[in-house]
Amino acid sequence: MASADSWDPPASSRDWQYVVLHHSATDEGDVASIDAADRKRRDQFGAAWPGIGYHFVIGNGQGMTDGRVEPTFRWQQQLHGAHANSQAHNRTGIGICVVGDCDASPPTPRQVAAAKRLLEWLSVRYGISPDHVVRHADIAATRCPGRKFPFEELREALPAPVGASSGRSHEELF
Ligand SMILES: [Zn+2]
Image 1 (spheres, rainbow, N blue to C red):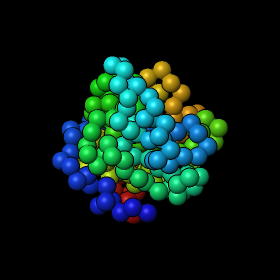
Image 2: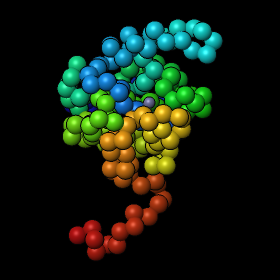
Image 3: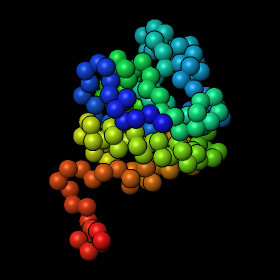
Image 4: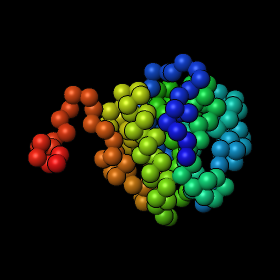
């Protein structure tokens, strides 16, 4: 389990505005396998991608430890992403890939727990509000991250934006 501190990038941070959630749409995978696949892709100018398009990958126990969060070179170097089919979201959106085919089955409990920790850390660190945490399908014509991806559960686990009411009475806190 990565400690939150290890997610701090060595490069100075970009001005992140969004988090975009993806699945790998494969049964197994890790940073290296996704990196190898993405290097075969070409951008709109015909240039080969420099590597994996996501900023973080969360393993499912098939090719990568279940629930392990691995930052990619795009996060370490604070580079734009190549994951969103949207220039704005590639420039300002942090791409997270959950390994697995979430159209067929939901992510593992450890993946869900890891995604919650990562989303919480990112939203606090960069001031990203819950409505800026989106699915790939919310911004592009795709089914990614799949029908069984627990989006509402993840979003409900996010801390409320600063200044927003929690909606709870004091009594409920006891
Ligand atoms: Zn996607």
